[in-house]
Structures are given as structure tokens and as C-alpha cells.
Amino acid sequence: MRVLSTICFDADDTLWQNERYFRLTEERFLELLADHAEPDHLAERLLDAERRNIERYGYGIKGFTLSMIETALQVTENRVPGEVIAELLAAGKELLTHPVDLLPGAEETVRGLAGRFTLVLITKGDLIDQERKLAGSGLGELFDGVEIVSEKTRAVYRDIFSGRGIAPDTAMMVGNSMKSDVLPVLDAGGWGVHVPSRIAWALEAAEAPLGHPRFREIGALSELPDLIATVTRNI
Image 1: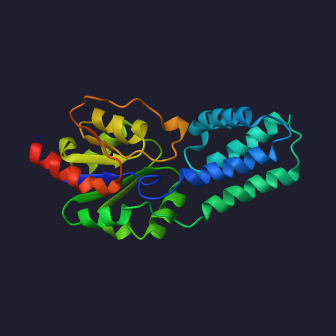
Image 2 (image 1 turned 60 degrees about the horizontal axis):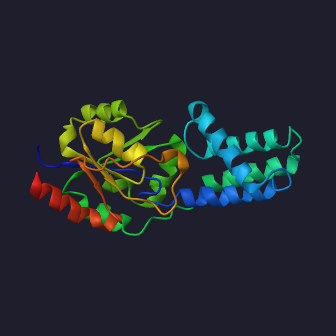
Image 3 (image 1 turned 90 degrees about the horizontal axis):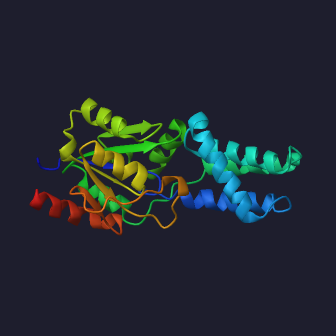
């Protein structure tokens, strides 16, 4: 194996808060529809709608907002009041303008690695929203490249590595999603580092590849530099 030269970062819930605000919006959704279904049932119906709609709308706030509206129409048999729809739309718009809230250790970690490694941000979701959050984060200038993709798969990572002239075994991907940030990178020949988030989206859950030689897990982003140093010594 060659020495690590490229560190790739996920964005949402790795560098800044994201799922927390989706959950707060979902709580408002449950309140608005409380007269039509039990909270657990509503939450299941909403998750089902999100799962169905990923192929149509992709990941992000716009798809989430449309899924809330679709679920509201379904559970009320198309009798949901117009003011409820208006509130759901307003909630989606609020998410689209929410200030970027960096996670603890994010800025210090990225700044500490900049210049020592090639840094690439690899995130999925709505192009405009991801660009807005990156600009608001103040971290954009620290990255040597930014890739905003519709999905994170083995093929997508291989294309990114190939297009940037990066040997997969010299690249490490760091993120909160086992499904998107770890497993496909390992399959592509790179290193996958899982940084669990306090609040996880059910559709990103997956089993940890325990025992895989290029899999690592850390409790906080601030632990990454020490992990990189350890991996580098042992390669």
C-alpha cells in the first residue's frame, strides 16, 4: 500500500449539523397531522415516502418537503387543509436558509490537514443547497476539490478518484454514514473512517464492516489527525 495523500470529507452531519434540523421539522409535521394519525405511524409513512422519492427527487430538503406534503395528502385522503400545506412549505424554505452550524472540531481538523494532504469534499444532495452550506461554512477555501453527487456508490468514488488522478489506496473518506461514506469507498479500494453522528437518518444505516483492514471508526472528528498518523505509520 502507498502512503495516504488524499483525505475526503462528507459534509452533512460530518462537518456541520443537518439531521438535527430535519428532525425538528419532522416534529412540526407530526404536530400538524396529529389529528389524522398516531405519531409513530406518521413517521413511518413519511420515511416510506422519502425512500420512494429518492429516485425522483434525490437527497435533500426539497425532496423531504415534497415527501411531507405527499404524506399529508395520503393520511388525510387529500383533505389536508391548505394552511397545513403552507406551513410545510414554509418549514422547507426555513431549512433552505438555515445558518450553517459547524460541528465541534470540524474547522480545526480541516485546517490542520490542509496543505499536508489533498482535501476533497464529497457530498450528495441538492447542488444549490450544498453550495450554499459550503460557502456559509467558511471551509470552502481549504478544499482542493468539491464533488456534489446524486448518490455515493463504488462506481462514483472510483470515477472521482480516477478523474483526479488519485490512487484509491492512498485516499481516505471520512463521514457519518456507514452506507454512503464507508462501505462503497472500501469497495472502491480506499480507506473508510466512520464518525458516528448523534442523530442518524434511518435510510443511511448499515452494518459496520468489522475486521476490514481499511475500516476505522473514531468518536469525534478531532481524533482524525491521530488516526491518520497511526495509519500512516502502519502502512
